[in-house]
View 1 (cartoon, one colour):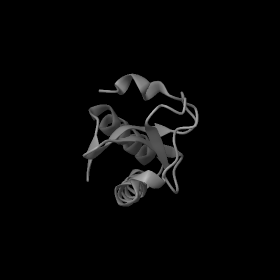
View 2: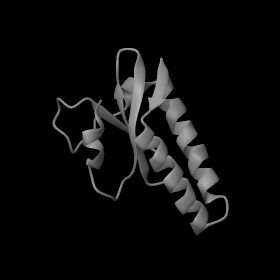
View 3: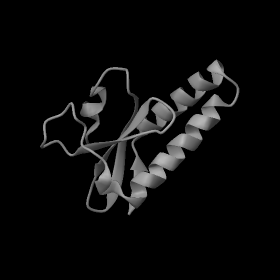
View 4: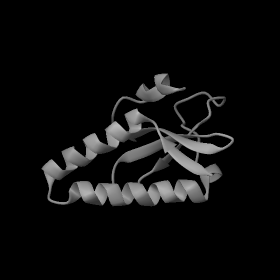
Length: 102
């Protein structure tokens, strides 16, 4: 199975990295390391993550929380790939990414 990130998710990652680097030296790099571990975990066991609890049960989106940072990877498990639709801060606008469905 392969992992694909929407352009919007990639932009969120870069924005978070830049913001965190402004807060403290190397914090953005630590964020990227945490994100990489989370993405690997998703690739290894995608079905083990819970659905996004703020959505109806029929929505296909799941979320994986980063271990150190207050961000969640929002993804959809498709037949041949895992599609990351957002890397969202957990304290900001819930479900803002719903219009990104392809």
